[in-house]
Image 1 (cartoon, rainbow, N blue to C red):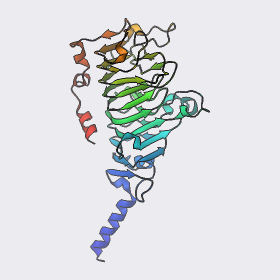
Image 2 (image 1 turned 120 degrees about the vertical axis):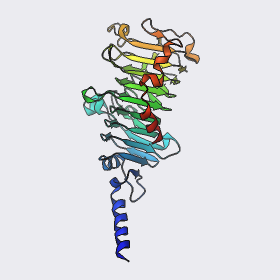
Image 3 (image 1 turned 180 degrees about the vertical axis):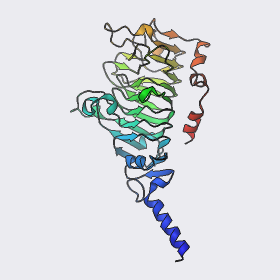
Length: 328
């Protein structure tokens, strides 16, 4: 073998042994040369970011992404084929925000074509507790074709440490839970997603937590479908975690009946947060519109009022990060 061929062979072996050198790495426990855990792949590209392609299977790991520009993508035909799962809770981890199966603090994060689950509630030996599946506190996160499964506090999307703004975009996602299962204080837009209420005595799709009237944050749901188990009770579009909660539903399909007022008080009879909230609804359809009422503190939007909540206006014309995230 010539010197040149020897050098080429050595270089190839180094690349194979050190996937961190590649912008795209693979997770597949069945293949030599691929990472066998998702966290090891995340750690390998932490310096520069990159794409992690995950083979079909179930990965029981508690995951943390602190680096910028990281993509996690399932390579199966559907999101069910790749499952990232862990069972942790607020009482077990020492706080709600420590319980997440997947915790992301890095900016420019992309998640697609997989499932993230927190299955704490599925063990009958576990007492009820907040149990987060996905925690997003890094700016410019794009989540598409992802299933997020939990019970109480499934998806946390919130500004980062020090009040750093968090913008997030969700498309064609399925989010399941019961109490406050989409919660936090961020500027988040959900398009063509399904929110599913699990069986529980009270189901609140959202618990937004804008802290002041001049904060530029809200949850906006456009063309989303709202469903619930037949044993779900007192189903509401949301309740205010903080006094100035801001949630808007545009063209929702209501496949379940809602509690009177559609939006409810944080603790009925004990708190009075609804008067300062920014809750709004536009052009709902579906069986849930029969007998639908809206709390007097909420707003029915008209065609003019809805314009400020469409995607481009909501993000001030800055949507390039969404396009980039969807192409990764």
